[in-house]
Amino acid sequence: MAADHILTFAQDLNGGGVERAQLRLARDWLAAGRRVTLAIGDTNGALAGEIPPGLGIVPLADRRYATQARVAEVVRDLRPDIVFCPGSHYTLVAAWLRWRLKDDCPPIVAKLSNAVARGDHGRVMDAAHRVWLAQHGRFLDHLVAMTPATAAQAARLTRMERRTSVIPNPPAAPLAATPAPLPPGRVVLGVGRLVAQKRWDRLIAALPALPDDVQVVILGEGELREALERQAREAGLSERVHLPGHVADPLGAMAAARMLALPSDYEGVPGVLREALSVGTPVVATACSPSVREIVATPQLGSVVEAEDAAGFAAALAYWLDAPRPAPVPQPGADSAERYLALFDRLV
Image 1 (cartoon, one colour):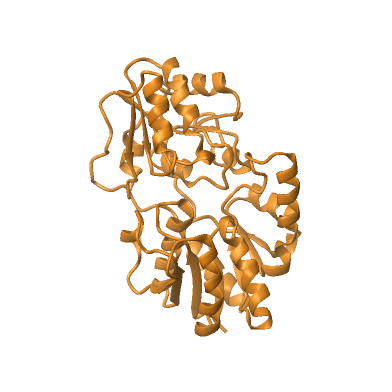
Image 2 (cartoon, rainbow, N blue to C red):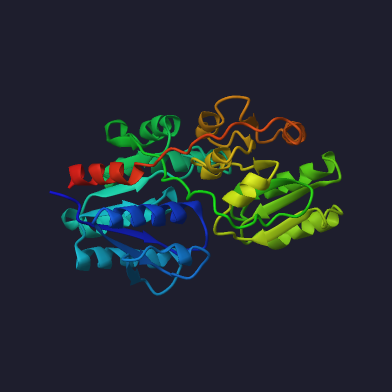
């Protein structure tokens, strides 16, 4: 049997990497002749233009996380062959589906999108998170990670050693011809939501250590916009820090920037690093995931520093302002959709 009907779910399309990869996979699954349904709280958002033709949409009324409980009703009504949980943020929904539908629940495949060892957890929260991870094998049929290192760590903590695969995200589209939305001067680029996890405050704090012609541009949107603007203003950096919002295709900006910076506390497998390297732009990243050193595999590609090493982060930024650019590194994942479909068919 084949997984002819795939159902997936999300809160909204506000521009996260999880939802972007989800839409790319849905596009390719549709192209392969499969039926794909997205149960979603709100179809508005920065990624709305990336909804592929033919994708079935089931509205869930609003974007609140609690509303995702209605996915169980959708699964019961539509009876898909497989359920795809698009990221770590949504595994509680997968647990609810298994509990609510019991034997009527189709196989559930979940993609690991965030670090299993969270950088924002204290001792108590970390212990609780590990207990939660250990339950995943009870409600998931299979777990997909995007690199071998993250797969090994996740398989051990979820106790799903024999039910974990490595499949990278599908690559970004080829470089568009549109001009990069960057100011004059040497640009240090950030790409990602303006949320606490990303720690853009570290990038702004490093800017005074760089020459006056260096500009910081962060492409993304989120609840910390006001706080970041205030930080730049109070540091006298308003003219050098630019927050233009979400950009549908950041590859042009990546190609034009001097480097890409990722100062996060934690990540899963940050696709922006692979995208930047694919256009020959070096990266400076914190060691926010085991996958970072897998992607930045040689010193010629960029620098990886410890998250709390502010001086080391600033020094790495300064170095790459004038260092030679690396040769482009092709993105993996051209066959990701096919590999997912093979996994789905096997489980069905």
